[in-house]
Length: 201
Image 1 (cartoon, rainbow, N blue to C red):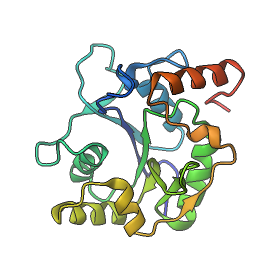
Image 2 (cartoon, rainbow, N blue to C red; image 1 turned 60 degrees about the horizontal axis):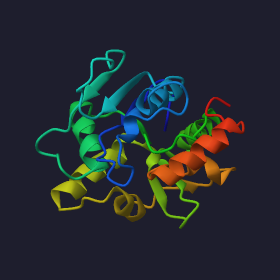
Image 3 (cartoon, rainbow, N blue to C red; image 1 turned 90 degrees about the horizontal axis):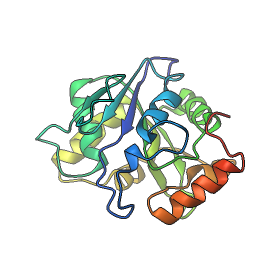
Image 4 (cartoon, helix red, strand yellow; image 1 turned 180 degrees about the horizontal axis):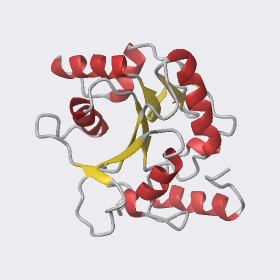
């Protein structure tokens, strides 16, 4: 069960951004680099926020960046999550990827309310109804299960969330869950933001 300020906030900022053609973590939609915007959103819900990714810029001192441990590296988001679970065993994680510039406080509040009831929870993708593993609350017991699955060869976060039967919730406005992972979607996000769809509602 989630308790206010007891979880660890994890911003996943280590993706390769091949489809975007630019580093999604450093794109700016809300006056801050997206990694920092995500961290600022999460501060209200977590006792500490860490950034999962490589720290190779000088303007990142406000938050601690943690690179993937060698034993987990090379497998995408699950690498960052398990690296941090190894360093912070027993902690629940609120996880947010840098792909979601339209995500607001409303969605994070909904996620945390459900986490209070059920422990682990994720949003359902508006596209296919499957878990969105990068907008999710991971209980420490789920993280233990992911680590065991890793040892058995599992590498897909989404498949593991399905296998663990974690509860899914729907966003009241599906646009909030749009993954801006291409230049075209980034432009759509910017259009919606200029029209008043804000992450700080």
